[in-house]
Image (cartoon, rainbow over all chains, first blue to last red; front, side, top):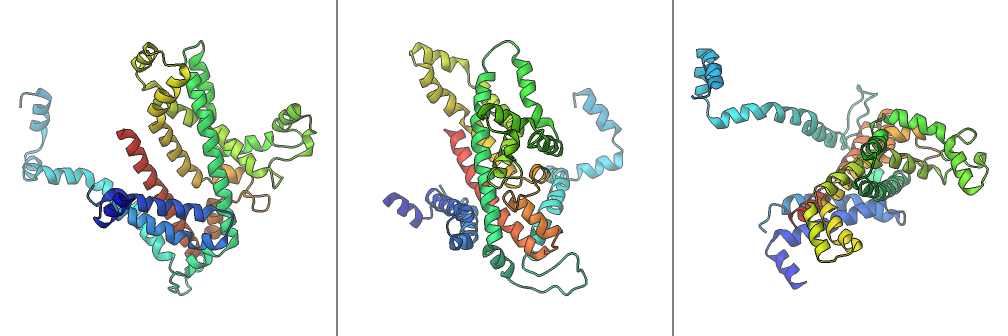
Length: 62
Length: 315
């Protein structure tokens, strides 16, 4: 966990990509889940943030 | 210039053209070759994407070109993301997507594993299995509509034979509970051969020497399957899931032909819903926002997937 946070602080690709991946996956699950309308409403913004973040952080150093 | 063919080509080039080409650097010539592709990519993919994003922020309607187009900001996005019908369409799509991928990967891999064994008539079986994939979705849709007929459909008779139920007592495409499964069955029937072919390529790429070494180490067949076959075929399996996932997310033709999105809106997938908004209700701005939401979702998923695929390949 400490390594992950250190990676985030030092702008390393691995942990940031992991964070972006989690956001995209969360957004897609929120978009398609049948339980709460509120999750559906905020799903797009979560996916969008994750996707844009993924594009940016894939240019960070390893 | 020792190559006689190159010499002939060079001497056949008109002097003026030869002089002009000599004046260009290798980099410029490379750009000249790539330029038509880049131009087509910009014209066919990038420009429509930017135009769609622009339209999604307006109230533009294609059937009313003379009306003033107003900038409405994120209003279209707000409407879509608070619309219960859109939410239900996305749930139907999720059901279709998850079950088709699970079934196609399981059946496709099993078939590939069996076909990979040497037996008599191997090629004939491969050809027969691959046949459904070669048919047009419109033909498959019509064909299965007949098979699903409660009175004369072979599918209903087959189920009745297995369960003892009356064949006319259920309708696969008319029943709210069964229609989502009806489209899953047809898509699985049609596209499992595609997954099988990709898995077969994966299984045939495993060198036999690895299995021979495992036999020498007295590894059981079960152990060989889990420690050699699955890890080495995994990139191919993931590729199959990526292809089918993206294809099924935008599934349209087969489902329109089979159920038309019904009964009610039980099989109304997002692509059908989007088409209705864009070309039946003519809400172009709204439909553009809908398309952007779907695009971002597929793009995000594909990004994760390609990353995972590269990791598995590098292992």
